[in-house]
Amino acid sequence: MRQGLQSPLSGRVSSGFGGGKSRHKNKIIIGAALAGVVPFLVSTFAASVTVGSGALEFGQGSQQAIACDPNVFAAISEEWHSAPTTQDASAGFFRVRGVTVSNLDLTSCRGKKLRVRLISTVGAELPVGPIPEAHVLQISLPNVDAPVTTSDAGALSLAYLTGEGSGVSSPMAASVSLNISGTSIYDGSDLSVTNADVTFYLDSTATLVNLDGQTIGRTTVETVNNPKR
Image (tube, rainbow, N blue to C red; front, top):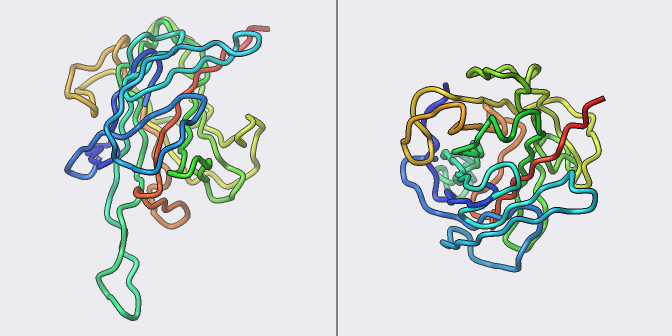
Protein backbone atom coordinates (compact mmCIF):
# COMPACT_ATOMS: atom_id res chain seq x y z
CA MET A 1 0.00 0.00 0.00
CA ARG A 2 1.42 3.33 -0.94
CA GLN A 3 1.92 5.76 1.91
CA GLY A 4 1.93 9.47 2.53
CA LEU A 5 -0.83 11.34 0.76
CA GLN A 6 0.38 14.69 2.00
CA SER A 7 -0.76 17.78 0.26
CA PRO A 8 -1.84 21.36 0.42
CA LEU A 9 -4.73 20.22 -1.77
CA SER A 10 -6.71 17.91 0.47
CA GLY A 11 -10.45 18.33 0.74
CA ARG A 12 -13.46 16.77 2.35
CA VAL A 13 -16.35 15.53 0.21
CA SER A 14 -20.07 14.72 1.07
CA SER A 15 -22.72 12.77 -0.95
CA GLY A 16 -19.92 12.18 -3.49
CA PHE A 17 -16.12 12.60 -3.17
CA GLY A 18 -12.92 14.67 -3.31
CA GLY A 19 -0.47 14.33 0.58
CA GLY A 20 3.18 15.85 1.14
CA LYS A 21 3.57 16.24 4.81
CA SER A 22 1.20 19.04 5.43
CA ARG A 23 -2.45 18.89 4.44
CA HIS A 24 -4.70 21.72 3.40
CA LYS A 25 -8.27 21.42 2.25
CA ASN A 26 -9.12 22.18 -1.34
CA LYS A 27 -12.33 22.83 -3.25
CA ILE A 28 -13.67 19.63 -4.67
CA ILE A 29 -16.37 19.38 -7.24
CA ILE A 30 -18.12 16.43 -8.80
CA GLY A 31 -19.52 16.89 -12.25
CA ALA A 32 -19.77 20.67 -12.65
CA ALA A 33 -17.34 23.48 -11.87
CA LEU A 34 -17.89 26.74 -10.05
CA ALA A 35 -15.85 29.81 -10.88
CA GLY A 36 -12.93 30.38 -8.54
CA VAL A 37 -9.41 31.73 -8.53
CA VAL A 38 -7.88 30.65 -5.23
CA PRO A 39 -6.52 27.13 -4.80
CA PHE A 40 -6.20 25.65 -1.30
CA LEU A 41 -9.38 27.44 -0.25
CA VAL A 42 -11.50 25.60 2.28
CA SER A 43 -14.99 25.09 0.91
CA THR A 44 -17.84 22.80 1.87
CA PHE A 45 -20.84 21.86 -0.25
CA ALA A 46 -23.38 19.10 -0.29
CA ALA A 47 -25.13 17.94 -3.43
CA SER A 48 -26.43 14.89 -5.15
CA VAL A 49 -27.50 15.12 -8.77
CA THR A 50 -28.69 12.57 -11.29
CA VAL A 51 -28.17 13.29 -14.99
CA GLY A 52 -30.04 12.05 -18.04
CA SER A 53 -30.94 8.39 -17.72
CA GLY A 54 -29.57 8.30 -14.20
CA ALA A 55 -26.43 6.40 -15.15
CA LEU A 56 -24.10 9.28 -14.28
CA GLU A 57 -24.05 10.36 -10.65
CA PHE A 58 -22.45 13.51 -9.28
CA GLY A 59 -21.51 14.79 -5.88
CA GLN A 60 -20.14 18.22 -5.10
CA GLY A 61 -18.23 19.83 -2.31
CA SER A 62 -15.31 19.47 -0.02
CA GLN A 63 -17.46 16.95 1.71
CA GLN A 64 -19.50 15.31 -1.04
CA ALA A 65 -22.07 12.67 -1.74
CA ILE A 66 -22.97 10.61 -4.76
CA ALA A 67 -25.99 8.42 -5.26
CA CYS A 68 -24.22 5.23 -4.18
CA ASP A 69 -22.51 6.71 -1.10
CA PRO A 70 -23.82 9.58 1.07
CA ASN A 71 -20.48 10.53 2.62
CA VAL A 72 -17.08 10.32 0.92
CA PHE A 73 -13.89 12.36 1.06
CA ALA A 74 -11.17 13.34 -1.38
CA ALA A 75 -7.54 14.33 -0.92
CA ILE A 76 -4.74 15.33 -3.27
CA SER A 77 -1.17 14.36 -2.43
CA GLU A 78 1.82 16.31 -3.62
CA GLU A 79 5.58 15.93 -3.72
CA TRP A 80 8.43 18.27 -4.60
CA HIS A 81 9.46 18.20 -8.26
CA SER A 82 12.82 19.74 -9.04
CA ALA A 83 12.88 22.00 -12.11
CA PRO A 84 16.13 23.98 -11.97
CA THR A 85 16.71 26.95 -14.24
CA THR A 86 19.87 28.79 -15.25
CA GLN A 87 18.89 31.52 -12.82
CA ASP A 88 17.88 29.25 -9.92
CA ALA A 89 19.29 25.77 -9.43
CA SER A 90 16.83 25.13 -6.60
CA ALA A 91 13.70 25.95 -8.62
CA GLY A 92 10.81 23.52 -8.74
CA PHE A 93 7.20 23.03 -7.72
CA PHE A 94 4.91 20.69 -5.82
CA ARG A 95 3.58 18.20 -8.34
CA VAL A 96 0.34 16.30 -7.91
CA ARG A 97 1.30 12.78 -6.90
CA GLY A 98 -2.13 11.26 -6.49
CA VAL A 99 -5.85 11.69 -5.82
CA THR A 100 -7.48 9.60 -3.09
CA VAL A 101 -11.19 8.94 -2.70
CA SER A 102 -11.79 7.91 0.91
CA ASN A 103 -14.64 6.44 2.96
CA LEU A 104 -15.97 4.74 -0.16
CA ASP A 105 -18.62 2.09 0.43
CA LEU A 106 -17.72 -0.76 -1.93
CA THR A 107 -20.95 -2.55 -1.11
CA SER A 108 -23.33 0.21 -2.18
CA CYS A 109 -21.03 1.27 -5.04
CA ARG A 110 -20.43 -2.32 -6.15
CA GLY A 111 -19.60 -2.68 -9.83
CA LYS A 112 -19.76 1.03 -10.65
CA LYS A 113 -17.15 2.94 -12.59
CA LEU A 114 -15.28 5.50 -10.52
CA ARG A 115 -13.87 8.57 -12.27
CA VAL A 116 -11.69 11.49 -11.17
CA ARG A 117 -10.62 14.62 -12.98
CA LEU A 118 -8.76 17.79 -12.04
CA ILE A 119 -10.03 21.29 -12.79
CA SER A 120 -7.74 24.32 -13.02
CA THR A 121 -8.24 27.57 -11.13
CA VAL A 122 -9.73 29.04 -14.32
CA GLY A 123 -12.21 26.18 -14.79
CA ALA A 124 -10.39 24.14 -17.44
CA GLU A 125 -9.96 20.36 -17.31
CA LEU A 126 -6.30 19.45 -16.85
CA PRO A 127 -4.64 16.49 -18.58
CA VAL A 128 -4.07 13.60 -16.16
CA GLY A 129 -2.19 11.48 -18.69
CA PRO A 130 0.71 11.77 -21.14
CA ILE A 131 -1.47 13.26 -23.90
CA PRO A 132 -3.66 16.40 -23.75
CA GLU A 133 -6.90 14.51 -24.44
CA ALA A 134 -6.62 12.39 -21.26
CA HIS A 135 -8.79 14.37 -18.83
CA VAL A 136 -10.29 11.54 -16.79
CA LEU A 137 -8.93 8.56 -14.85
CA GLN A 138 -11.39 5.69 -14.46
CA ILE A 139 -11.57 2.31 -12.77
CA SER A 140 -14.32 -0.28 -12.38
CA LEU A 141 -15.05 -0.99 -8.73
CA PRO A 142 -15.13 -4.69 -7.76
CA ASN A 143 -18.41 -6.45 -8.48
CA VAL A 144 -17.90 -9.24 -5.95
CA ASP A 145 -19.27 -10.18 -2.53
CA ALA A 146 -15.91 -9.89 -0.77
CA PRO A 147 -13.62 -7.27 -2.38
CA VAL A 148 -9.95 -7.32 -1.40
CA THR A 149 -7.08 -4.85 -1.34
CA THR A 150 -5.50 -4.65 -4.79
CA SER A 151 -3.18 -2.58 -6.96
CA ASP A 152 -3.93 -4.59 -10.09
CA ALA A 153 -4.64 -1.93 -12.72
CA GLY A 154 -5.84 -4.57 -15.16
CA ALA A 155 -8.34 -6.10 -12.73
CA LEU A 156 -9.66 -2.61 -11.94
CA SER A 157 -9.75 -1.68 -15.65
CA LEU A 158 -7.73 1.51 -15.14
CA ALA A 159 -8.17 3.74 -18.20
CA TYR A 160 -7.92 7.28 -19.54
CA LEU A 161 -10.99 9.02 -20.94
CA THR A 162 -11.69 12.32 -22.64
CA GLY A 163 -13.73 14.88 -20.77
CA GLU A 164 -16.80 13.58 -22.61
CA GLY A 165 -16.13 10.01 -21.51
CA SER A 166 -14.66 8.52 -24.69
CA GLY A 167 -11.72 6.14 -24.52
CA VAL A 168 -8.21 7.49 -25.09
CA SER A 169 -5.37 5.62 -26.76
CA SER A 170 -2.30 6.49 -24.74
CA PRO A 171 0.54 4.84 -22.86
CA MET A 172 -0.60 4.33 -19.26
CA ALA A 173 1.50 6.37 -16.85
CA ALA A 174 -0.97 6.11 -13.98
CA SER A 175 -1.43 3.41 -11.37
CA VAL A 176 -4.14 2.73 -8.81
CA SER A 177 -4.51 1.26 -5.35
CA LEU A 178 -7.72 0.07 -3.68
CA ASN A 179 -7.35 -0.57 0.04
CA ILE A 180 -9.78 -2.08 2.55
CA SER A 181 -7.30 -2.74 5.36
CA GLY A 182 -5.05 -0.49 7.40
CA THR A 183 -5.86 3.16 7.99
CA SER A 184 -7.38 5.79 5.74
CA ILE A 185 -5.02 8.22 4.06
CA TYR A 186 -7.55 10.98 4.56
CA ASP A 187 -8.34 10.82 8.28
CA GLY A 188 -6.62 7.77 9.76
CA SER A 189 -9.86 5.83 10.31
CA ASP A 190 -9.89 2.03 9.99
CA LEU A 191 -10.42 0.86 6.42
CA SER A 192 -13.01 -1.76 5.55
CA VAL A 193 -15.29 -2.84 2.71
CA THR A 194 -17.62 0.04 3.61
CA ASN A 195 -14.77 2.52 4.26
CA ALA A 196 -12.26 1.96 1.46
CA ASP A 197 -9.52 4.17 0.02
CA VAL A 198 -9.00 4.37 -3.75
CA THR A 199 -5.86 6.25 -4.81
CA PHE A 200 -5.11 7.22 -8.39
CA TYR A 201 -1.36 7.90 -8.85
CA LEU A 202 -0.83 10.13 -11.88
CA ASP A 203 2.73 9.05 -12.70
CA SER A 204 4.94 7.23 -10.21
CA THR A 205 8.03 7.93 -12.36
CA ALA A 206 7.37 11.70 -12.37
CA THR A 207 8.55 11.82 -15.97
CA LEU A 208 5.38 12.07 -18.07
CA VAL A 209 2.71 13.76 -15.93
CA ASN A 210 3.80 16.61 -13.68
CA LEU A 211 0.97 18.95 -12.74
CA ASP A 212 1.78 21.94 -10.56
CA GLY A 213 -0.52 21.73 -7.54
CA GLN A 214 -0.99 25.50 -7.55
CA THR A 215 -2.83 25.29 -10.88
CA ILE A 216 -5.58 23.08 -9.44
CA GLY A 217 -8.77 24.64 -8.14
CA ARG A 218 -11.06 21.60 -7.92
CA THR A 219 -11.23 17.84 -8.04
CA THR A 220 -14.22 16.02 -9.47
CA VAL A 221 -15.34 12.51 -8.62
CA GLU A 222 -18.09 10.64 -10.49
CA THR A 223 -19.63 7.20 -10.52
CA VAL A 224 -21.19 5.61 -13.58
CA ASN A 225 -23.36 2.52 -13.68
CA ASN A 226 -21.85 -0.50 -15.40
CA PRO A 227 -24.80 -1.96 -17.34
CA LYS A 228 -25.32 -5.68 -16.90
CA ARG A 229 -25.70 -7.56 -20.17
